[in-house]
Length: 212
Ligand SMILES: [Zn+2]
Image (tube, rainbow, N blue to C red; front, side, top):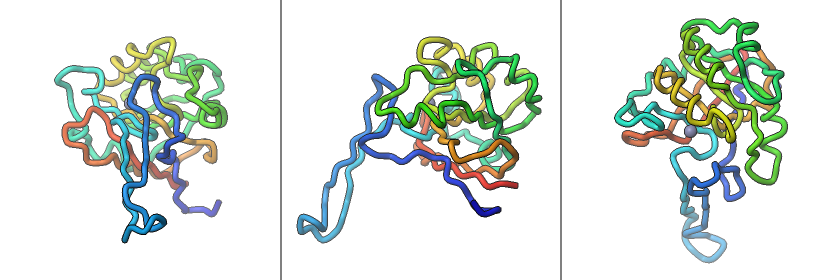
């Protein structure tokens, strides 16, 4: 990887991508195709607001809260830090304390999910998540934006609702569904641009980082 080159940390949108159980799955079909004699290629895409690499707005869990329209660009454009989490279950205050999160920081968490969860044939319920205590610790540190390397900041079995409530209640901006398998811990420039979904509770996003 050459220095100063952008790394795409988004996952591709396709029929075989992982999706949250119960949410509408992604369907991509060919509406028009030059292979079948049409004059052009046009795909029909069905997906939901939390598909693949995406952002959560406070509205995702909190009735009447801020929407994707309220996203400040500073939350998703600027310096970020990729940190490696060794815990194989959850991101907890014990490990976060050692990483010394700073006020206003954009933090992306690389866990075993990047190497393991995305490579499974189906949705991995056993992914590493942010515990509700870890979420509160990030809020107390004044972190601006968090990014995680699977489909939810909260766990499938534990703290799914609680962690979202703590982070979104503090209006922290959340990026979910990153693939950090090709990324080393360190400082990067971040650009994450969600699609312009009016009053969205979340939105699929393209996310790039570049070593600083
Ligand atoms: Zn989400």
